[in-house]
Image (tube, rainbow, N blue to C red; front, side, top):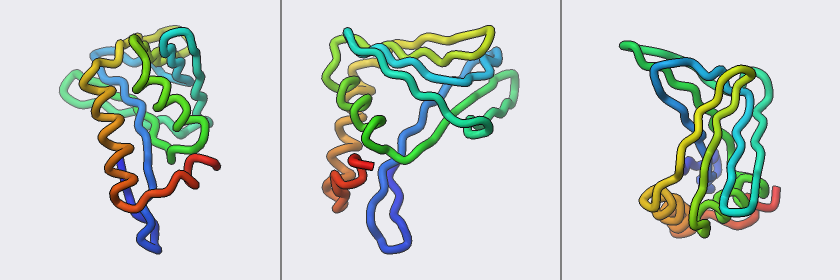
Length: 123
């Protein structure tokens, strides 16, 4: 997701999303992109949880910083990426599709086309 700050400067965000029919109560995400493994551990309360019509969803949104940008680049260039949404007692694994990898690259390209700067990725 791309937003603009009060000065009109583009800011890139990422969202990790799980949805299904059972709660995971996610406390971290483990991303395995080929031989590289990354972990994203949100602070308490940063994961939004909700449900409706028998479906639940849990998600975490954050500004893309240096670490998240490295993960995104690894996912885009990987042959196979699995994202694990990990809770204390449950987990959910999903494989990132080729279309999703292309969408990530398109989002990075759009961010740059809107005037986004790599400076955001050094934070």
